[in-house]
Image 1 (cartoon, rainbow, N blue to C red):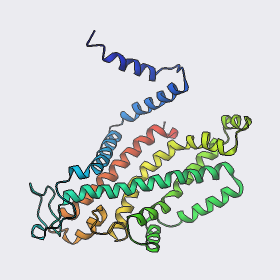
Image 2 (cartoon, one colour):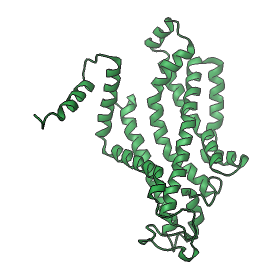
Image 3 (spheres, rainbow, N blue to C red):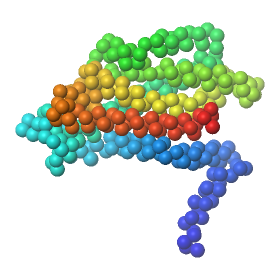
Image 4 (tube, one colour):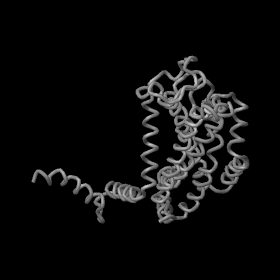
Length: 307
């Protein structure tokens, strides 16, 4: 009995989540989430992306605990040292520990990505839902503004915005956010145009609900799954844009250990002391690949067109 008792609550929870006759809306919602998780877990590449992305974010958060050296301390006598027991990933042109700078650089690069997502996802969702639900003049006005931003390549437009402001992390985040929201607005508008014609939205209107309540409580939540997929897939391009701005000297400024900036300051050593520029480049590649794999897995689970 003692051997089977720990499994009993787990079996009950699984049966409760997979019930074909849920007793409440909460049980039905949790059941859908659990089924989505089971479908996601069956995709090994998506699980790899999830684990790698989670590990990268965790390492970035714990950088002060995991770093072996102060990322800003220079030691010219140890400059351009190869990987060793004292410096796991070697040292850069100023004798700074590459491993410690890589960890702290993840805090900056991934922090910029998170900041951009938190800015653009709600804004793009709001613009798309308002345009799709209101229609008419509001739709034409908001979509023409969106088309103007979409007419320029993201990196070129971000460069223009940063040049108009001043180089730095804050300016880079604002510039990337200003160039990243239009696809989300387009996607939310397309979803809203479909949702607003459904019977349940018409029933909500008949109850006397205002347009704002319909959009906030019934339309926007239906757009969130597709938006989550698009955001996850776009994280790799946001990482590349942030690193590109840093590489061009318009993002994080030295001595901040941002991955793109680390590559820019060490690119002249690529043929001899290859580990100095290559290691942050590998970090950018791994992070971008992880979010792409995660986004593909979420798309298979959340996008109804893929089912």
